[in-house]
Image (cartoon, rainbow, N blue to C red; front, top):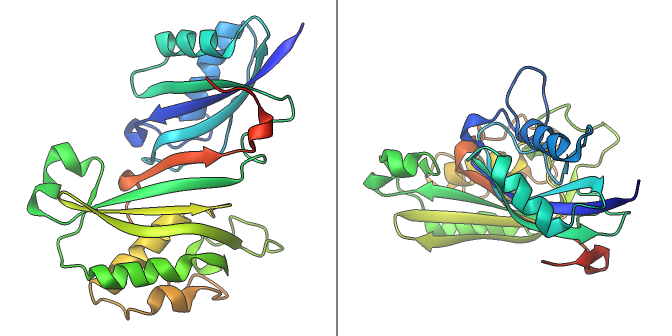
Length: 258
């Protein structure tokens, strides 16, 4: 049987999922997508994600690789999936890819955003689902100073859950973009890198907010870069305000861009 390699780009609300990665007896995004793909393809079908988002984390650009029967064109598969997937998962785009495409290992970069609410209305139930309501003043200059320190090639061992990467891993990540932006009612942090460690963005944001609120020195984020462990990192920012926005791949891997 001839087959086709596709990339699915997903939006999902992570609130009712125990993360991306398939787990027994619990609801995950990968589990829901694989169940639906398998139903459409009449055979067990794997879905490989570009990143393993944690419980509660959202996505507007999770990239997923799957191998399906050739009868399923990318557009036809997208429409069929959206007819069957639950209402907290949606396929925004589907692309036909070269067979060597791998959603995780082919990625050049990933981008995340983190939303912080700074006004009183951030506690509204219509915003609290998507933002971290920070009830203390934040020094905007200190936030950007911390973000600027992240750009470049650094060891992020201090910003990772201990033991989730092999000891032989150097924990180095190349950060292309790190910036804070103003928006009505609060701030949005954007970060793009070639790779991310487990809880890395949440640890970074938690430490930046601590430094910007005066709970830690303004130099805290920079001083932790290259630290031998995560003993001195601030508690991670809540998962519900984090979103995977975009995954970049070499254009040569695309056979068709919808």
